[in-house]
Image 1 (tube, one colour):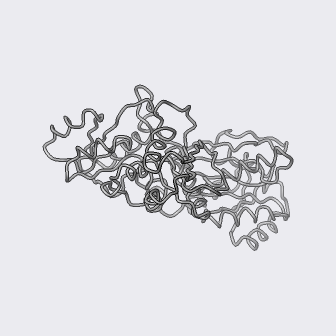
Image 2 (spheres, rainbow, N blue to C red):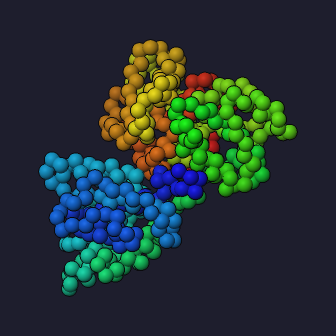
Image 3 (cartoon, one colour):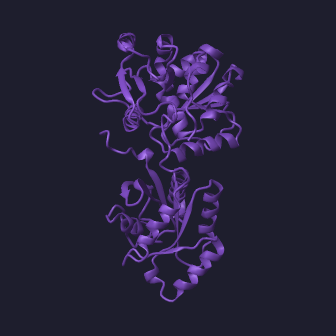
Length: 401
C-alpha cells in the first residue's frame, strides 16, 4: 500500500439492502459504472456481502456493500441474512430498495437503521418493470417511510445521477472531518514518531496505523521525525527543541515515557485510534475500572485482524501478561478476531479492543454500543497498556471525533 492509497476502513461505507432480485447488484453496477457485482435472474445470487472500494464522484473514496436478500430462506439463507445484519453495523449510509406493495421487511430494516442513526435513502428500484404501478408505489413508500424515494432503473440509467446526489445529501454530519491526531498538533509543529520494528510489521513495511498517522501529519504540514525505540535518546539529543508531540507504539510506552522531555506531549498510535475509531472517553473510563475487577474476571480481547498469532503477540501474550500481573493468575481471558464478536456478552467483565485500523468507525462504534447496552466496560489496547503501566494520566488523549 502506498501513502496515496485510501484504506477501506477509512472510506464511507454505502450498503445496498433489499429482497432477492430487487436489483441491488444491478444498481451497484450502474452506480459505479463497472460490473463489480454478479447479476442473475436466479434469486440468491449474492451470498456473502460483497465489499467493493470505489471512487464516487462528489464524495471520493467509498466502499459499496452489496448484500444478500434479507428475505433469503432455508438454513443457508439464515446464515446469509446474518451476514447482512453484520454488514449493517458497518454501514454509514443505507440504500433500501423497494419494488412492490409488500414492504413489511423493508420497513423493519428502515427501523433498524433509524435506531442506530444511520442515514437511509429509499429507492424504488427497477422502475422500468413496474409500468403503471410505479407512481402508486412511490406514493406508498413515501407515506409509510416519510422519505421521498429516488426512482431508478439500472437498465436505462433513470435516476442514477439523482441517487448519487441524494447519497451526497445524506452524508453523515462530520463526515471527512475526522482526524487521527485532532488538535494535538498543527502546521509547523515538530512531531516525533517512535516506531519499533518488531515481528508484527512485515519486513520493509510499516503497520497501517503508522502509515495513516504519518500521512495525516504530512497533510497537516507538521515537521515529522521518526526513530526506533533504541535510537530515541540519540534523536532527542540532536534536536534543538523538544517535539510538540511524541507518538509511540503502545508497547514502548514505558521506555518512551521515561525519556520524553517534560514539555512534550505523549500518546500512542493505538490511543490515537481509540479517538479516531471509537469512544475515547468511554475507553478511558473503562480502563480505570480494571483495578476493581475480580481476580477471576472474564476478559474478552477483540482483534480486528485475523493474523496467525505471533511470538509476543500484543493481544494474546503481552496484555494478558500485564493483566495477570495486576490482578492475579485466575483471570479467564478469551480472544476473538475479525468479525467474530459475541452478541451475548453475559459473564464478560471487560472488553479490550485493538485500535480497529481494519474496521471503519461505524463498525467499531456498533461494538461500543453493544457493550454499553449490556453494561460491559470496553477499552482499547493502548489505553489498557498505559493504565496497567501506571502512566495513563501522563498520556495525552485525543478529542473524540
